[in-house]
Image (tube, rainbow, N blue to C red; front, top):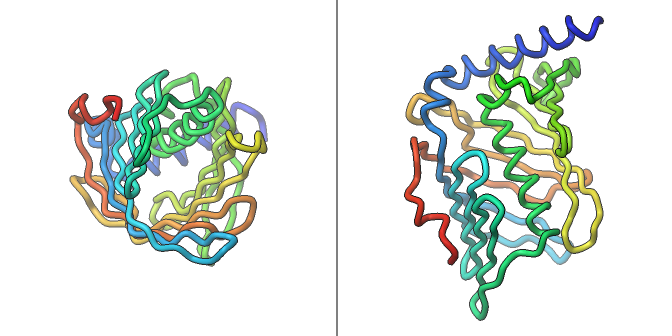
Length: 223
């Protein structure tokens, strides 16, 4: 397949996915979201249940709250708050979490209309027994993001991403499978996600998502 044909086919898959998710106008209008997560973390020492709250405004604002732990990223600034301390994130932590925020922004689909993103066809893969069409998203200074869209519905079934773990410096491969889609403010949004890192299941979660045009700036203030 010629490069130009490959890219045109990939952009066709993305265009169909945008329509399936709710349409470019609706997706572009809602540039922020919050979601609550009820999850199980599968750790080396056993399973642990937890509840988390997330807030995001694209492309570079993010907040997570899990118990007494809070993390905020606001552009080039980031903080971590625990019961006993609030500190600025290290550059390694900013790089790790910034890459995660970037990959979720890419999965919101609308950015892919920008020519700064290169998209190419990955081909077919089966996710939970269902055929999907895959595309690879590349951009300078970021890891590639692979996305697989259900061939029947056009909705995102799985993503493959990478990040460099701040603590160890190791590159980690992450696979996320999305399911249980429902309409939220005109956007088809997943209600379930399972996450594997380096092939090992680490998180299974139920999600309750809400979409907004903007969020109050105070949401992303230093905690």
